[in-house]
Image 1: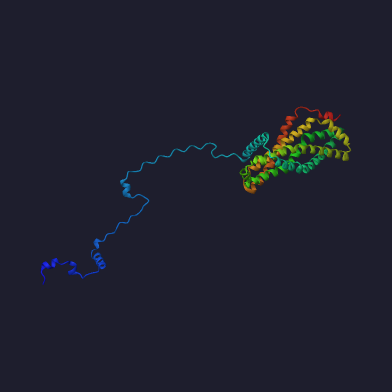
Image 2 (image 1 turned 30 degrees about the vertical axis):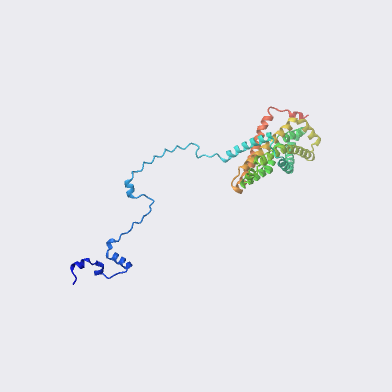
Length: 336
């Protein structure tokens, strides 16, 4: 039997356990000593600080109190009505056109095209309207004046009414319905489809290329249409008075010659120029401020015609008050 000293010098693994493979020895050692196993710490990322760090760190500084909100002003949420905005646009556009005409910035080729459109293009409708208006007034005047024995003054009354009021107003109304609506529709379509921006990119200003020729065409063509309408209206009146009521054409024309004064025709031409400027500026301003697609183009066209007609009647009243003040004696000369 071995001695106690020999037993103490022997290794424990040799005496108590059979020899193991290295890997088996490691697994066996771990199985016999579970207290030696330790879990390695796994670092974790966190977007929020931990409690310990929050407890150790100093408290965050207090956030500054928000500044008191300013009280809303009286017109902070107010926008001007569209009619006022368009009216101001029309005044601004008129000023730009006037400045460009004075400085000679006129697109002549486009001006000639618009003159052909406003003048010969509108002559048929304007002349037909003037002829029937003159005949309608002849029926009313000749009947009453013949009963009173004043048939020699019929021509003077018709000439004064046609020269001072009917010819310029009727011609302007027809032009506003035919040409003004076309101007508003064309420029409105170009504005909606961004063709005006394309003109700016190409180096052509829309006011120079689109607006100025249209305004000048209306201002220059409308007086000529008014004179032709006056002549045709007076001729149709004389023809109807001679054929229906028996008043001679020579009596009508002689009475008209005695009643008319040069200022009557000059005032008619001045009124026509003012009416043409109103039609063109309003139609172009309503066209270039169009938005909303096809529906917006239709609304702008209708609104432009309505506003042009109202402007024509208001301007006619103002110009009549300015040109014809006090008592007149034109009919005294018409009666001979």
